[in-house]
Length: 108
Image (cartoon, rainbow, N blue to C red; front, side, top):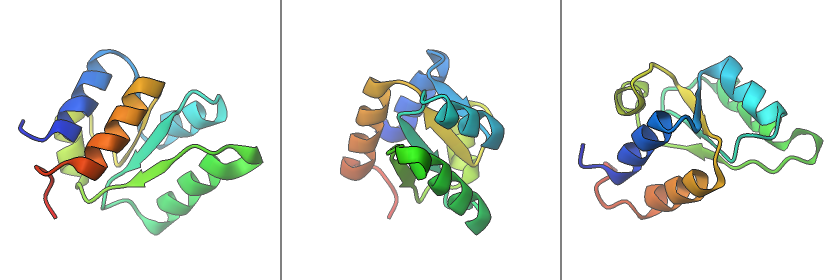
Protein backbone atom coordinates (compact mmCIF):
# COMPACT_ATOMS: atom_id res chain seq x y z
CA UNK A 1 0.00 0.00 0.00
CA UNK A 2 1.68 3.18 -1.21
CA UNK A 3 -0.87 5.62 0.17
CA UNK A 4 0.42 7.06 3.45
CA UNK A 5 -3.02 8.02 4.73
CA UNK A 6 -4.37 4.50 4.27
CA UNK A 7 -1.21 3.01 5.77
CA UNK A 8 -1.68 5.18 8.85
CA UNK A 9 -5.25 3.95 9.23
CA UNK A 10 -3.99 0.37 9.12
CA UNK A 11 -1.42 1.16 11.78
CA UNK A 12 -4.09 2.77 14.00
CA UNK A 13 -6.27 -0.33 13.60
CA UNK A 14 -3.44 -2.65 14.61
CA UNK A 15 -2.71 -0.51 17.67
CA UNK A 16 -6.36 -0.52 18.79
CA UNK A 17 -6.89 3.21 18.31
CA UNK A 18 -9.66 2.94 15.72
CA UNK A 19 -13.43 2.53 15.99
CA UNK A 20 -15.28 1.15 12.96
CA UNK A 21 -18.88 1.33 11.88
CA UNK A 22 -21.79 3.57 12.78
CA UNK A 23 -22.54 2.34 16.31
CA UNK A 24 -18.91 2.13 17.45
CA UNK A 25 -18.10 5.58 16.06
CA UNK A 26 -21.16 7.18 17.68
CA UNK A 27 -20.20 5.55 20.99
CA UNK A 28 -16.65 6.84 20.66
CA UNK A 29 -17.94 10.35 19.92
CA UNK A 30 -20.39 10.32 22.85
CA UNK A 31 -17.63 9.17 25.21
CA UNK A 32 -15.28 11.90 23.85
CA UNK A 33 -12.76 9.27 22.76
CA UNK A 34 -12.90 10.16 19.05
CA UNK A 35 -10.32 12.69 17.90
CA UNK A 36 -11.13 12.51 14.16
CA UNK A 37 -14.03 10.90 12.30
CA UNK A 38 -13.47 9.75 8.73
CA UNK A 39 -16.25 9.10 6.21
CA UNK A 40 -15.93 7.30 2.89
CA UNK A 41 -17.10 8.92 -0.32
CA UNK A 42 -19.97 6.43 -0.44
CA UNK A 43 -21.45 7.36 2.92
CA UNK A 44 -25.14 8.28 2.65
CA UNK A 45 -26.37 11.80 3.22
CA UNK A 46 -28.19 10.56 6.32
CA UNK A 47 -24.96 9.07 7.72
CA UNK A 48 -23.07 12.30 7.01
CA UNK A 49 -25.74 14.41 8.76
CA UNK A 50 -25.91 12.08 11.75
CA UNK A 51 -22.14 11.91 12.24
CA UNK A 52 -21.69 15.66 11.75
CA UNK A 53 -24.43 16.36 14.28
CA UNK A 54 -22.97 13.93 16.84
CA UNK A 55 -19.51 15.46 16.46
CA UNK A 56 -20.79 18.99 17.14
CA UNK A 57 -23.63 18.28 19.62
CA UNK A 58 -23.27 19.64 23.14
CA UNK A 59 -20.27 21.81 22.36
CA UNK A 60 -18.16 18.97 20.96
CA UNK A 61 -15.79 20.02 18.24
CA UNK A 62 -14.65 16.69 16.80
CA UNK A 63 -13.40 17.15 13.23
CA UNK A 64 -15.06 15.14 10.47
CA UNK A 65 -13.06 14.29 7.34
CA UNK A 66 -15.14 13.64 4.22
CA UNK A 67 -12.73 11.65 2.05
CA UNK A 68 -12.68 10.72 -1.61
CA UNK A 69 -11.85 7.12 -0.67
CA UNK A 70 -14.47 4.45 -1.28
CA UNK A 71 -15.69 2.14 1.47
CA UNK A 72 -13.74 -0.65 -0.22
CA UNK A 73 -10.49 1.31 -0.13
CA UNK A 74 -10.87 2.23 3.54
CA UNK A 75 -11.96 -1.31 4.40
CA UNK A 76 -8.94 -2.83 2.66
CA UNK A 77 -6.64 -0.55 4.65
CA UNK A 78 -8.14 -1.42 8.04
CA UNK A 79 -9.25 -4.99 7.44
CA UNK A 80 -12.92 -4.39 8.36
CA UNK A 81 -15.73 -3.17 6.11
CA UNK A 82 -16.87 0.25 7.31
CA UNK A 83 -18.01 3.50 5.70
CA UNK A 84 -17.26 5.49 8.84
CA UNK A 85 -14.34 5.19 11.25
CA UNK A 86 -12.94 7.23 14.09
CA UNK A 87 -9.39 7.65 15.27
CA UNK A 88 -9.41 7.54 19.05
CA UNK A 89 -5.91 8.88 19.61
CA UNK A 90 -4.82 12.51 19.35
CA UNK A 91 -1.55 11.69 17.57
CA UNK A 92 -3.16 9.42 14.98
CA UNK A 93 -5.95 11.95 14.44
CA UNK A 94 -3.59 14.84 13.74
CA UNK A 95 -1.29 12.72 11.58
CA UNK A 96 -4.19 11.36 9.52
CA UNK A 97 -5.66 14.82 8.90
CA UNK A 98 -2.23 16.09 7.88
CA UNK A 99 -1.48 13.13 5.61
CA UNK A 100 -4.88 13.39 3.93
CA UNK A 101 -4.52 17.07 3.11
CA UNK A 102 -0.87 16.73 2.03
CA UNK A 103 -0.93 13.28 0.39
CA UNK A 104 0.33 13.42 -3.17
CA UNK A 105 -0.33 9.66 -3.56
CA UNK A 106 -4.07 10.22 -3.10
CA UNK A 107 -6.29 9.98 -6.13
CA UNK A 108 -8.01 13.23 -7.12
